[in-house]
Length: 238
Length: 395
Image 1 (cartoon, chains in turn brown, purple):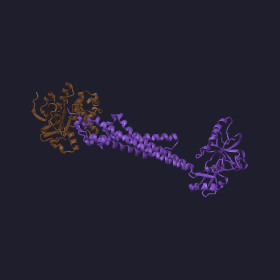
Image 2 (tube, chains in turn red, orange):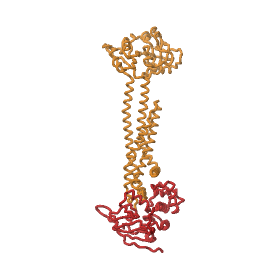
Image 3 (spheres, helix red, strand yellow):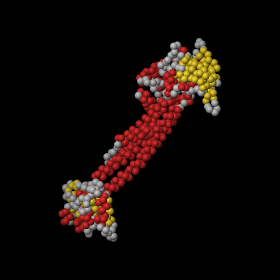
Image 4 (spheres, helix red, strand yellow):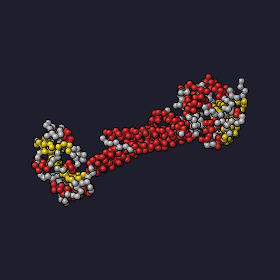
């Protein structure tokens, strides 16, 4: 599934080439302004910046939930703008996992059902789906609570279910939008730890946050301001 | 195939998670289909009942009533000689004249005077061929015969309801009192479907009527004519044959034509009910579109997350369309069942034979599916067009 290059760990999973995103027609808002960057397999990236700096726009574009006004987004080398909606959706489902601040679990499904949702329409039997979803839940330490509905889980547990849902498809990159924003500090620490555990040589993690503690735990920190990247630095972890 | 199963699974879980709402939106198609199925079924059953009745009565009986001529103060009558003239008409196989007598109080048993004075029993002077003309058999005994007529004997035949009230036992020799005169009961006539009043009547000969009750002539006021072929043509000729240009008028009618007309009236009522059922279905469809549109807004976050997980716009649209489809299928089946139940209940209550076309049931259930799918088009398109970024509220 993963067409890794000769040097797997260095494969470029996502790339933005001179990307701009302009909202509105009469009054134009330039949310992203000529940004170029790459995310490679095995990286742990944080994107920081104040409100309105363009980090959410960037996340939407990285996840090809949105398309740029100018510039090119490539996912595993494929220009997202040239795909049909169905092809782009499949590419998104295969290559990218999402974790959101508000968890966005489907309330009437169990933890297992929520994780399974990511595996629908992929030609898997229900037994295969269940098996893989269960595996992912066990990876985040929630195997025992697989039959609980979201309302029966704590915030931290819900976010772990969301993480299981993001990784069960074996994506090349997990995009997380303020994943610790709705959690208390203990749960936040726990979730952050899980992210670090999930990082493997062929999977990248990209966290959008304004929490400097979270940002500094990454290996690479991209700082944004007014729709531009102002710094892109490799951090040395203590 | 696996994909279809997955879509159905998602649709069903979406519906079962909101049971009350699902039941409410299902109510539209259920009521629509039930109304249509019940309307058609009841009408078909009652028409079947009428047809069976027509079959039983035969469509070849003509009833001729005397109409007022120039005689003053007299009940209109048909002169006795006219009976022979009608009998000689081609295609006529049987004719019987009757005349209902007035002011006779019948007392079947002692002590019942007051009741039968308040609700008098019809006393009918009749020709001897009444059972064969009406094609009604006798339950017991015999009908009035030539000897009864020539001798003017005080004998009577009674209708079946009267016999029941009377407590008449088969073969029992009993009498019935008419204004104090005792008449011997010689037979009981079976139910006369076309003339239910005959079921509680007392029949006597014209001779007895003249001797005991002061009838001047054996002139009937009504003729029953059986004409198996050219029934309507014969009915048209009869008034002329009866009056021969004289003052005695007569109206001839074929009573089963009325039943026919009745089934025609039911047809227009049927169409009206069908239209109302159709309207209910359309309103049900609007309800589905309405509730599902609200549901799409409420579930926008679910739609957003599904899009983020790689479900395409068309998959989302199909998922919502399938929810509508499931509502339509279940609504159609339940509606057809409810409608069939109503038809059964009505048929049971009115003594009809239940007539219901299985193809019709399936057809109307399919219409419900069609309405639901059409109604689901708008909300599912709306769901597919939602922008995931707007519904996911990134931080």
